[in-house]
Image (cartoon, rainbow, N blue to C red):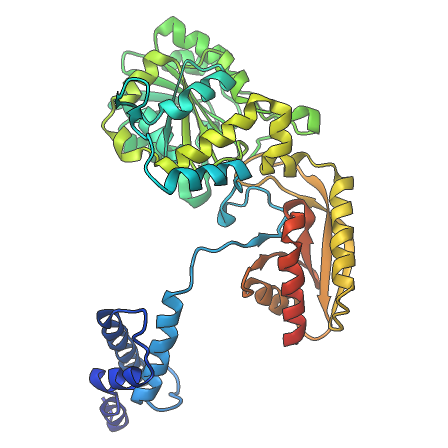
Length: 473
């Protein structure tokens, strides 16, 4: 260590000196002394690290390492503790089920039910009719079964948990037969083979990536077979020389061999989307009609509800899953149940669901209506006369996202924003830094705001955000 580094280390402030500066400025208000002391230690430690790194070629050091400088950084971090990290944003990307942006927005009824249930106590596991302990699943079991045609229902915290729980119950220590072309990976490194391994099921691959025949499944069945698994390849398509076996055929094989058949459906759509121009997305009702023993899917994808893993199927099979000790570890809370029940009520009338569930409305809204909303936003922004920003209308394509409808582009209309003084990347960054962040995409020299994922109520955030950005330019 050279002399310069030693001298700099000697200038580091003592913790008591930093605290004294903060006490003079009333920085302790709303924060305990222990937290303030810990932040002081953290900042001084980072200062020490900066000095030591400079001696290893870590760059030049600017400024002094005084108690005032340390106190200033502590103040900044204490203020940040009072700012919510999880915040509302405007999804202007055109990706309807944007995993990074929370997937499906909840309908108004779901939000009201969450508040109502969480403000006080609830009958989460109390049967009001019998005056004794009940099951939390009962709050949504009846409506899920009524809408889907299933015999029984279980809800856990997400679809990965649903798959894990079902596999562990039905195939732990036994082989689970699955087509090689269905060994998928979805976002967040969720891989079917790895989930199967954690569940205790033994993977038995059959067929090839592009072609799997009925005989492949039939020949794989043996005394060690615990389950036949079919996975909906929700986030990709294999085209060309392909072949796969329908679920109905696998169900026939399962009945013949007395082996349960499970379908990981993934997105979980209840509304037939073919009449809106979408292809190849099976509905939950159609899948259950095949006689599959277990069907699993997400609550926050095409269903448009809260994050949840929904398990539907035969009562005898689901009774086994309910008794699995893992079920308690993976169960959902009262707020998710409240939101899911309110969402499912809209599905009692499928036409109503298309209008009331935002995800379905965004998917099926005619492009002419999207254009009308885009032109209303354009007129609103042009009235502001923001000299540095220009706006125009463009035709583009949206996506379903969230591993749903992967190959299908949805016609949309976007508002293109350009700046005379800053680059598109800087403009995009400024939109992200607003009080209500606007998450958009860059195309060539423009920022695109996709109106398919923007509601009229969110125009106020965009208007205020553009006015602020123009003022910073």
